[in-house]
Length: 189
Image (cartoon, rainbow, N blue to C red):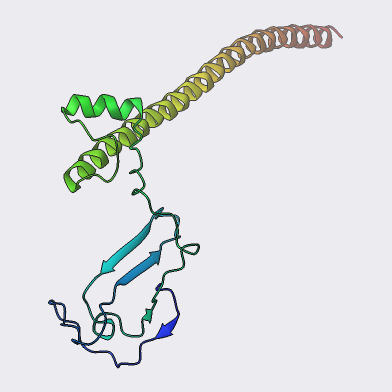
């Protein structure tokens, strides 16, 4: 947003690609558009100087500043350095495998961004595949342990069945002997 001081008295006109000529008697005017981009995505302040453009033509409703207050402007010595590009070891390894070297700072070109996205997608897919294999192994290990437990329980139950069948056979034999003895005694009396 431009710094407010004195409003433009002339009505806005359509902008043209060529700067309009200033009136012969009017003093030259220096326009500076300052946009404070305090959004976290942006870390710099953009400043555009529009030397010979007439104020109503380019910036309708803009403000004219004859003298710039030094204290209110941010210190603009050198442009801020570009943010560094941070790559993981895995990303560096895959980029080297692809035969690509990326610059150490941002911004990247579209081609470089596409390559970096591809490498990061490969890493995500690899991690996803590893997680999938780990979950499958855990599931199979759980099934194997349940199968082993069921098998052990089956063995115990089979042994118990054999013991009960032996005992049942023994009791049947004793019952038959008792029946013989009682029938023999009943026949004697």
